[in-house]
Length: 126
Image (cartoon, rainbow, N blue to C red; front, side):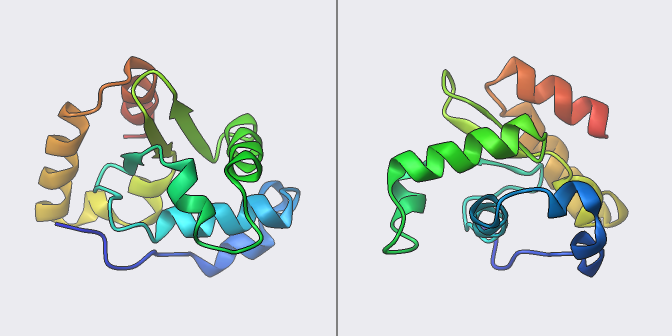
């Protein structure tokens, strides 16, 4: 099932770690949350060229800079070898684990993750 909307907790705006991010990194994070390819495990294809088309001011290079910032701060992790991106707290913040069918979908999606690093981090999140 395609992701139709991004869930953002209002408390994010009071989180000091979040507030230290650049505005462009925050905007990219919100953009990633709303991608239709985002699965129930919080994984989506790494597509910086596509994401750059979401705003006429963006370039693929600026998206990669924001991704690097998001990864450095552990909001998003990505693997260039498998072309996967992972929103680290997606499962926890979107209540996937509380909805039985979503939890099953997340487990199935987790089995399809190609990146060993992302699989390990997702396992720690769960």
